[in-house]
Structures are given as structure tokens and as C-alpha cells.
Image 1 (cartoon, chains in turn purple, brown):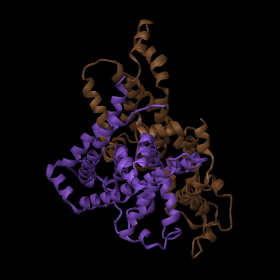
Image 2 (image 1 turned 135 degrees about the horizontal axis):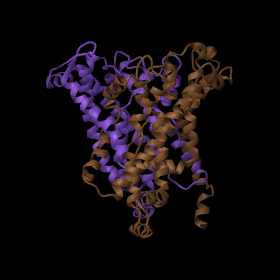
Image 3 (image 1 turned 120 degrees about the vertical axis):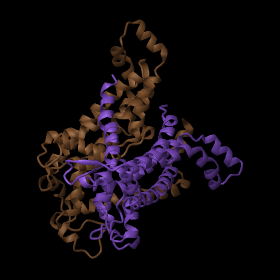
Image 4 (image 1 turned 180 degrees about the horizontal axis):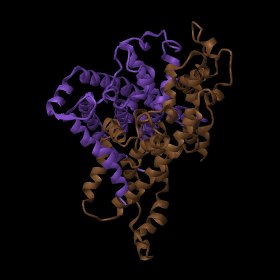
Length: 272
Length: 288
């Protein structure tokens, strides 16, 4: 019964990981017909090269642009829609609707906003895709918008678990709305927010479609994330560097995804 | 119930909330509105504007039809749905089987194999991208002579099993009361019959949620198909959207119509199965 799953994991997870390590230690000739052992020095050289450190820097910047703002906006939507009102379902549906958008769809959608030729906000300087300092931020907005639906439903689910009596008791104790929010809601929501942060971080590390569609790495390589660089290092001669960088991405993913696993164990519950 | 109903009547004090919620809705939907504007506007006229308009200029309704005729979106759409169906069916079957083994069977190295299964969460396709591409290159499935079946194989095979699915279904199976298992054993149920007649029906909500997030993940794939699809005719819908950047001006409404069409299947799922989808998404996040 385990056979099929284990075969898939072996062939498409562990065997490729093994090959990554192999390629990282060997150098291929131009056609890939011969290889020679060069050892860990190739990994060291790649991971200290400006190509790698630049890629990591861009990737982490992207993460910092998209994750905190994404969490805050998702929370704002969830707090606004977490109340008993006539027709609240309509607003909840609208707020979760961006789930229907893939990263590629979101990139095309944001084309209409930030593209230098046709975008509605094309003359807004801090969203300028033609400028290295603003391009990455403009792309990250498409990620934030795309995951807004996911962020909203996750925070909303978290808010359901905050007992109303607690909020009412705090109100009777003279807690104002701000104090209730920071002293009760946020602490009780912290596992949810942590989970969300991890999920969005993994997505940020793997951002690709929006970058390729909106800037294709430009201007002047300023939006070339680690994954974007890796996809351009597949020729036999550059495979060693590509493999070493992939291992770098693996370590970054591991740091974030390990946290995800630790939280996942506690998060899975199906009551209703 | 009475309090509930009174809470649902609109009170004057609620007006502020409605204003806020409406404002937020406008912000969330504004990008969608601009995409609709771009899809409907006459491309050659709207591109000449010095300032982009908030409404479609010289409305042309044929963009959605043209996305299929001039834009050839039909083939990628069918192709995407085929890939998605195969991945969803494959993942569901392997997840249910593996979850059953991990939940109910005793066998050597069980803990190690479970650890190795969960550890694949640390090895997303993005990390093993270049060596997975080489696997399919060495099979001759990726290259200038790629036929549709080879493209389909390369897109589907790596995703026929997922640790997330195994993990979620196993959690469901572990929640089955022991009495139920004992009763089934007394009735002479073997493993397969217990799985099919008891375990799967009882955990149907969880499996249903997983099917939905599996659909979302498979349909929205971008980076992997981008690497292994080497012929335009084998494109998925998501890859077809890439053409927006190189679109000629006369057809500059098509990519936006295509994006709306591409989001449509997921939108339908979202509307039809909102509760189940949200449950799946909050249990284990999905990318795409």
C-alpha cells in the first residue's frame, strides 16, 4: 500500500536530492558528456559568489516585502469581517475570492496596474517596474494580493477560536478596543499567525511566475531571486553552480518548512 | 435564535461597518476590475491613452471568444484540466493507501518510512528542480521533439504522491474509533474491505477537502511545467498567460480575457465548495 507513494518520493524527491549533491561536487564539460570531481570547493565558491548572495538578498527582501504586510492586511480583513451583520457572507466571499487566482493570473492582473506601458499606476514612482529599487516591491504586491484570500480564511478560522466571553469580560473590565486587540486577540491568535507567516514565507522563497511575467528578472537583474537564478543555470557547464545554489535554497526552505511541520502537527483539527 | 435574528437586523450603528467593509471590498476587487476593463477595452484605442481609464474605452465583447480563436486558449485549458485530473486522482489514491498503512498496519521500518515521507515536505519541486528536469531529459521527454503524452507524463509523474495528503488522511484515519475497527474485524472485514467500506466513507470530509486543495495546487502549477514544457502546443493555461509580456498591441485585450478564463474553474470550485476548501486550506496551506 505504501509502494506507489514511496516510489514517487524516491524517484522525484530523494534521487534528485542525491543528484544535486553529486552535481554540486562535480564539474561537467560543455556538452555534459564528461565530468570531473572538483569537491566541496565548488559549493563553497558558488555559495560565496555574488550571484548567490545577491540572489539570497533579493529573495529575503521579497520575503520581507510580502510576508509582514500580507499578514497585517489579511488580519485587517479578517477583523473587519468577523462580526454579525446582515450580508456579512458576501463580504467574506469577496475577501476570500483571490484564492481563485494563481500566481500567474495575479501577475497578469497586476500587469494592468504596474506595467510601465499600460498600468493604471504606471506613473507612481514607488511601484515603477523600470526602477531597481521599486520593481521588487511592486511584484511583491501581486503576491500579497494573490495570497490575501488564503490569509483571510486562515486568520478568520483563527478568530473563530477566540472565545467571545473573554472579549466581553475584557470590555466590562474597561479594556478599550486597541487593548483588547493587542492583549487578547493577538496572543490567542499567535499560533495561527505563526503558521501563516511560515506558509507565506515558503511561498515567498518559491516565487517565480510573478517575477518572470512582470519583470523577467529585470531591471538590471534587480528582481532575480534565488530560484529565478537557478532556473538559468541548467546548461551542463553551469550545472555545478545550479546544484550548489539549489542546496542553498534547500537549506533556506528547510529552516522555514521545519517550523511549518512543527506547527502543522498541532494545527490539524476538523471540528464541525 | 431570537438574539441571533436581532443581531442580523441592520442597525444604524452598523452603517460604519458597512462603509468600511465596502471600502475594503473595492480595494480587494480593484485589480480584478482593471483586468476586466483591459479585457473589454478596444486595445488599439486604450493603448493610445495618455492616462489609463477606470472604465473600458470603446467596449469590444469579443475578447473572450478571441482568447479561444486567436489566442488558442482551448487546448491549454483542456491540457491543464487533464493534468489536474490525473494529479488529483493519483494523489488521492496514493494518499489514502499510504495513510491506511501508516495508520493501521504494523510493518518494519514504519517510523523511518513515515519520517522520510514527511521529510519530502522539505524537498519541494523548486529545490530539486534542475535534477528532476534532467531525469526527464534523460528519458527524452523534454526537448524539441516533445509529444503531448511525454509532456503530460513529465507534468504528472512527480506529483502522483504528496506528504501533505498522506498526513491529512492519516490524521483522519487515526480519528476512527477503535470500536468501529473491532466491530469490522469481528464481522470478518479484511483490510481492503475495511478501508473501502468504513475508513474512506467515515473520513470523506477530509478526503474531500484534500481533493480540493490538490486540485488548486495542480491547476495553478507554474515553475515545473515552465521547465519541462518545451513545445508551445503542450502549454498549460498558466503557461499560456506568460504571453502577456510579448503580446502584440492589436491583441492586448486577449491576455486579460485569458487570465479571467484561467481563474474560472477555480472560482467555480470556490463558490460550490467554499466550506470544504477553506477547511483544507486552513489545515495545510497550498501554493500556486
